[in-house]
Amino acid sequence: MGFVHNDKHKAILDGSNQLVILAGTVSKEIDGEEQHIESGENAPVEPVKHEMDSSLSDAMKRTVRMLIRPVRSVDHAEWLRMRHTLWAEESIPDLVDDMQVWLREEECVALVAERPHGGLCGFLEVAVRPCNVNGMTGRFGYIEGWYVDPDVRRQGVGKSLVCNAETWARNEGCEDILSDARIGNVVSQTAHRALGFTEVERLVHFQKRLNQGQTTMQRQSYSSGTPWEKAVAYSRVVRIGNLVFVSGTTASNEDGTTVAVGNACEQARFILRKIETALAEVGAKLANVVRTRMFVTDISRWEEIGRAHGEVFAGINPVATMVEVSRLINADHLVEIEVDAVIDDKNTGGHQG
Image (cartoon, rainbow, N blue to C red; front, top):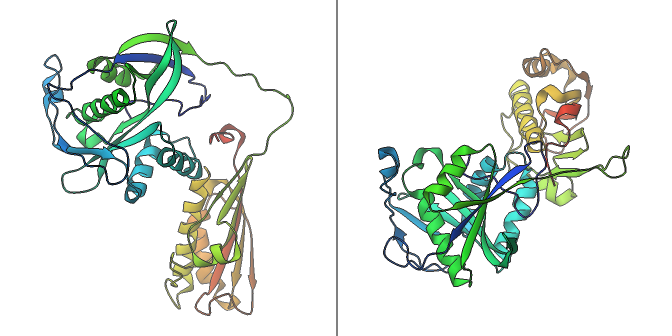
């Protein structure tokens, strides 16, 4: 889990909807010397190294040398990985859409910690918010998200990110910086206090559903990147409410290359793994599948394909159909599979938009 799980400009009402608001003063200097960061892909930045406070445990006094800089477009995959770890209840499309806002808007910046030998190990997203805190109204820096990979925690990386966020907020004209943490997230609260934040107030969020008895059918979709999806304008998987539909899927890589040419069983196994990945993108799993349809170019090979199907769906036993077709879109494709799934009620609504 990350140090802080906050609302990203909106309340996530998921049953643990209580927040601790913490505040800190934007200091004039950081560890004795002022550090400057600039927004933009090509902003000049220097590696920073911070010693942990003397009051902290020996484990927290270990330091690593990290480059703290604004996020760049080339960081997309690593940034998304860390965001999805921190906000696991959010769908991938929603996280990606939110990332575009951070890259586009002016009064916010996403900072990342770069490992000495490449790759990222942490991020912090900070924005300017108009707020009223204890009767004091103004523009405050606000830490919207803060995460550090487990292997480099308690080594000063989180502190380095926060110190750079303070510098950015001060340059934006803010005198204070705010953050929040779930009431039950003691690790996050401890980390904030160690960096000079003080608790301001505790909030309990309430929710009341309007139009009782009516349901809003939220639509989610995901593309796996094969060339046909873009050319024909279709999604690999679509979720509406608790219903999930996966398109006919073949043994093709993202570049359209056929996998396991001539081997129907291996193609079916590859397809079912691909379907499992697609289901996960919208919060479903193989256990939720209620129907499969298999289109094969040679029905005499039904046992090979059926063996792969049985390996995956033993104990789930969805309704299934296998039919022979004259050919598929690629002559090397021996089988195409599509599935329908239903997510049970206790999982419905787990992906907030």
